[in-house]
Image 1 (cartoon, rainbow, N blue to C red):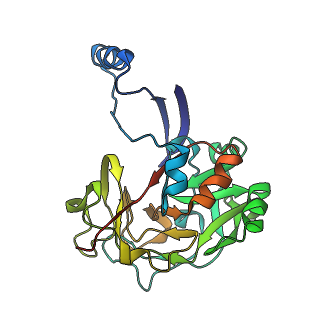
Image 2 (cartoon, rainbow, N blue to C red; image 1 turned 120 degrees about the vertical axis):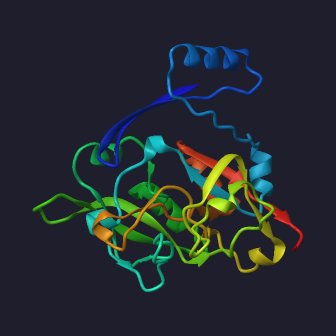
Length: 270
């Protein structure tokens, strides 16, 4: 399977081709040879495939968005945040206080019509019918916020999309998680700028799941950070969502694509 992503990211056009093959597929080695011979920049990412039965049996599932459904938004487009508990070095811990605002110009606005769910630096935005389905499911820990499109010199326009808002944040993951470079974490807060490898397998202690809701956020922030204390230039990926199998089932039945679902592991207390 192959997917082509053509998006604007950090002010530059980015064209990426995603090719998905089983690790034992003979075409995998052939593709590697072709990429090397043509001197194409490429990244080998590996992940686990799970069955529906494994998803249904999972205590919780991490939602990892893929880049082809990314839209640009957040602090640079006048989304408001409380910085009182934000890390001064990386911005982790900043708290959104109002509606979510996306770039209303160009490819970002067009991208909303290409999927029922898009993500913006790990924030999840869903179309109106899916938001209504989620609301009817009476999921614990979930509410919705409005989404606006911003263009310079124009009044922000409210969209018929909703931002998923989780009221529960899980404790830090277990150090027995794998595919996580703990040494890359921000030296000030140990919460932000965390890098990952693949396959990523997130683990939590049994006690850390007490009081978990259907919809939660991780404590950690993964990925690229641009932060000097000024929201107008900030780029900060937010924590991944961690949801119950009930939420996964709703997304599956709605035909949502573009996300990797990673069942967590539960480990004994260290």
